[in-house]
Image 1 (spheres, rainbow, N blue to C red):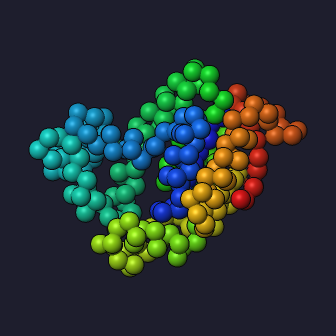
Image 2: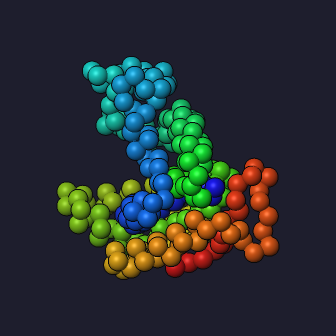
Image 3: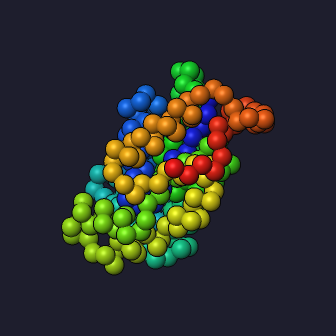
Length: 222
């Protein structure tokens, strides 16, 4: 089974690609939602965060108070690193469990969608990485359209806190450019999906040492 990582910056169109692949029957795990689940009462994530930052980061239900946690770590790289050090290992365990289940079900490909995929070692963990990319002004317009309360400055600050498209795209095997209509992006997603679910390996490639299928393509930009 090909383990596919799907990533992209804010308002890149990543979620639209993930939704289309689900429609095509490809299993997709939203790792960002998995993080949210780890913040719920009684979860291993909530316990780990409380252990790291104190009980005051939990609300009355015992869930992580996300605004309070954000206020505590925002702008402090050391605190962000402490948070990631607690949460990311838990996410990885759940992700590996999910991938193993999909492989046991006989899928030829399964996708993990994550904003921080490249930053968290996705190149080593997945057979094929796909980035969804869009020009900054297009992304900015999308965010402001769906969240009129946001300001251009705030959105740009969020963008600057993420990897640039140039850095992210350079690591990925395929880049889907999302600068047109949703229909155009869906067409690109369909074409790539057909290759990802194929059992055919790269020409001249051999299976990796971990037994996973090698990537079907490299460096294609569409």
